[in-house]
Structure formats: C-alpha cells, structure tokens
Image 1: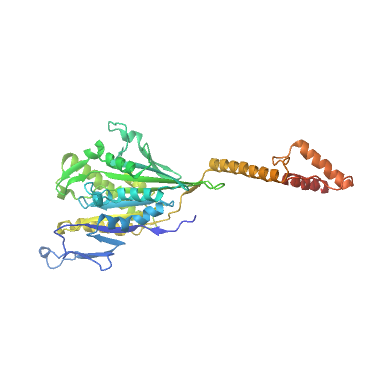
Image 2 (image 1 turned 135 degrees about the vertical axis):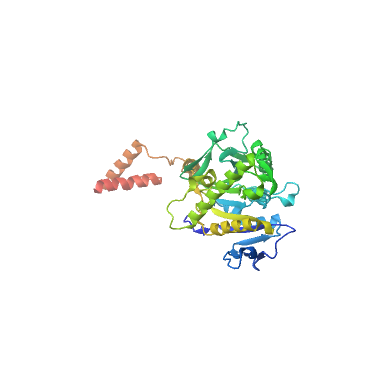
Length: 435
C-alpha cells in the first residue's frame, strides 16, 4: 500500500491553576492558537528591542479539559488506525510539573482521572473483543531511559544496575527495537493494567522519583509504554498478518537548574535530562529541514529509540504540557516553540502487512483436500466412483499416448477421458506430435 505523507499533529495542554496568567496567555476562539504577551521591563531602558509577544498555531489547545476529552482529542483516532495496521506514537513534552505523567498515565485514585495509556489499553481490547477473523494478539512492553541507561520496567528478573549491558537499541529493516526488552502477551484489559501499575512500583522507577522546588514527585526518566497489536486473517489462500505498535511516551521534564534547586544526584539527573532533550530538539530541527541529509538519531538513547516515531512509518502526536503561571512563561515559550517545530515534521505511515508463507501453504493444502472430498462426493452421486484426481502415473500417461496415436491412425473413434488431468495430457500429446 502506498504511503501518504502526513505531518505530526501537535496539541498544547494547560495545567489548571488558580494563578493563571490571564494577561499574559490568551487562547484563540477556535481553540487552536495561543498568544503570549510579556510586558517590557522598564529597567532595561528606553531602547529595548526584546520581543514581547508571540503567537503559536497548533492542532488544538486543551484548557480545563477532562481526561476523557483529552483522550478523545489526542489519542482515539491514532489508536483506531493502529488497530488496522498503522504504527502510532503519542509523546508528552514539557517542563517539570506541567502534567505530562498525569496526561499519559493519569491518577489511580479515581477511574475518571485515568490517562492516555489505560484508556488506549481499554480501546484496544474493546475493539478486539470476540474477534475471530482477524485473530488478534496484544502484547506490551515498558522501557525506561534513566541517565542514558536502559531499564526494563516489566522485567521479572532482578538486576544489579548493569542492565544496559544486556539491552541496546538496534536498527533493523523493520525499524528500531530494543534488544533485551521483555514483551508480554496480555489477553485482557485487566492483565495489561496490572502490568502497567506493577511497573510503577519497579525499584528503578521509584528510585528515580525525586523532589525539588518545581515538583514534589518529579519523574527523572523518560518512559515508553508500547502496545503491540498483531492481527492474523484466516482466509484460505490469503493468510495475512498485520502488525502495528503504539508508543506512549512520557518524557522527563525539561527544567532550568536555577529554578529547581537541584544538587548532588538530582543535579546529575537534571543534567542528563536536559542533555537528552537538547539532542531531541536538535533532531526535531534537522527533521523539519528538508535540505538536511544527515539526521542525528544516534546522539542519545532517546533519539535512537524515537527513530521510528519521528519522520518514519508512524502517525505521531505531540502533547506540549505547559503551566499557566506567569513565573513559568519562559518554559511555556520553550515548549510551544518545540511543538511548532514538531508540526513541520512529516511522516509516511503505511499499513504493516506481511504474508505468512508457511501458513499460506498449509491453508492451500487444506483447501485442496476439501475440494477433493467435494469432487469425490459429487462423483459418487453420479456413479463415477472410479474417477481419481491425483496426478497421472507414468502408466496412465503411456496409455493416453497410445490412444492418441491409435485415434490419429483411425484405429479408435474416441479417447477415454474422465478428468481434467487426462484432457491436459491428451492436448500435450497432440502438441508433441504436431511438432
């Protein structure tokens, strides 16, 4: 199937706050634009050329929206297309404390506050419930990137911190994958949710939740939850397999070190986070430039893992999470600039179809047996029980050859034929004689 070029869809979600800067942040009437105004600093003097207003146009602005509406707007169509074979990626980007994890995972206290991941799981299993043709298999994985080290959040084995030696991002003809990452089959929505919430208790995950002035429970790592969908169509000679995956990415928060009050290990983590996000931004700039030949996917583990999701065979959606307070306006501007750059990236998603040759052969053999049985039943009803549909033996071929020669000499008036194979052999013998 031919690919159709599509661009990345970008949305901004504003974290609710009682101190919303109404005089600085304005939303357009169509909920697709956002304007930022900053008053000139009188201390800078009369001559001050610093920009004071910005306007950004995106695919949607989510302000005071419920988790349900956010999912309907951002994710529902992408998940629906994944169910028919298109890869999809949803990525939450923004400063620390802007609501990325709430958007992606949600709160466990109330069902209505669940995020994109549990809702996507629910949509997938609702769509595949009682499906016989196609037969659908769902699997999941959960990857964490912490300080440029890969961790498997669903691993059942303990690790001493050297998991990066076993895990690596690998390129292959089908795209990138993480070698050593465990992938788990799930038969029901509950199974997937149990693995998701169990992973959040994983010692790597909990060890990288730190506290600083911007967020008392800040995630210090990038987390990628992936849903793999395989649909097998049992159609006689067309045994088709459709594979797709949905990457749901909760990026670590970008932050200014001067604001976070970070020190020691937390400072080290923040440095790694900012460095990987800086590489991600460089990647976005390169992908948005059609004249660029080299795209720096290998600069970091994060950018390498995202190779499929950005500019490849994938439907991609970005949610830029921002804070509405005046004190965070610089970080808000940074996130909106990032989202605007993302909007210029194009991809060419296609349905991922493969054909199971071994399965096709088995299906054809089964069909041949059924057809033979039907013919045998038909022949018995018309008293032709001696007819066989197997390939002709050497003796049978010799007999037909003899009859053809006798027919041409006038020794016999007709040739005994009872099945199509014999008809084909008679014509073959005539052709040999004419030559």
